[in-house]
Image (cartoon, rainbow, N blue to C red; front, top):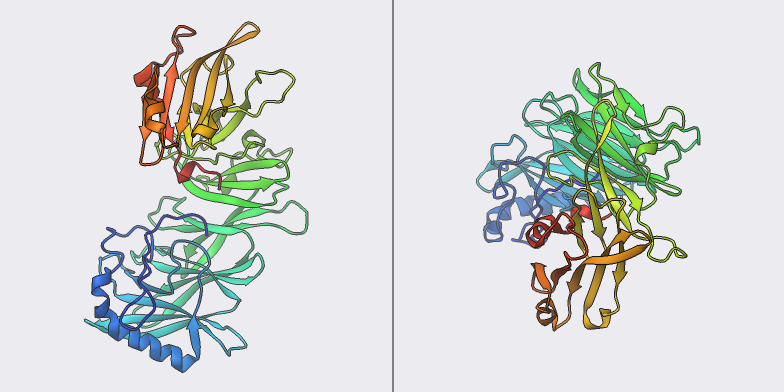
Length: 453
């Protein structure tokens, strides 16, 4: 599954020390997700029951390959009452010819008394991922397991975990990915499953599964851009007009596109950005892929960075510098620009640009002092056929970084224990729409969210 941020804790697999992990999205607090190391003795009874189960099955712990829930023992709060009433243990039966994978679910019946209530069996070579979502709208979380069948082939299964038994809600083969999102705004999550068609007929698609009549049913689907190599990422976020959407970024032969999906009022899934003539989301295509789609302005809407190559200082050399126009899309497929930025991914920062820079400003690197722990990006104003520098942003990492940050004309933008970012601004060249305080507001350190996925 794709990137969900869920806390997890692994506390060992020894007698008396239980592996604990967060078990789903949307819990009330971090403290409700896991037991602290000092409380591990409380679970000695559970550990003994796990050991007995493993011995009787001839099983070993199974590896969960991806996602945030990768611990082999997960305490789970299924009903959201901040009480972890169950534990899921992920095992592999070493001598099983069929369905060697197991998920053993233990229910707590006393203070330190957990009883094995049922076992889920799975085919495949390993467990790809595990998630917990409310798919049925009853307030309890279902378990979603991706069983790894082979290279690039998975079976996605969802289980309702009741008090004494389980109910399989779906089982579907897929080859790219999936994510959970409440696209119809009914309060529970639906599953969007991403499929690549190996026949070459352009039938790559997103399938939409909703809970109906006791099971997860595919009710609609939408074509993805033709020519995809793979799914780079998929994220649920708002569209510009507030409707829920899913943003699927695809790797293409010459770059990436992002398909923007939403559910229409009639319940059909639609690809808002896919050009019906070319079959590709041309409006989101980019060959520069160092920066991924992100909520650049923090309003809940995912914006897509469309690069604009800057003029090179040397007309004989191709440009390798870009401004990024962050485009947002509404539920009618209309786009607008949220902001324009310059990203220095190699130095770990980005700058939100004032109005009027695009078309007048270019940039170039100056790493002539890199041996002293100083790397820089210089911004130039075009005056006729001449380029004049007016702003330099430095990344300082050497042992003398504080002294270099204090050099005449420089002021600090950000600092931590190992790096100082500072700048030098020359207003005599151009009143650029930003002073020192404005530059501080517009300067940002790149976090993991801004990195290319």
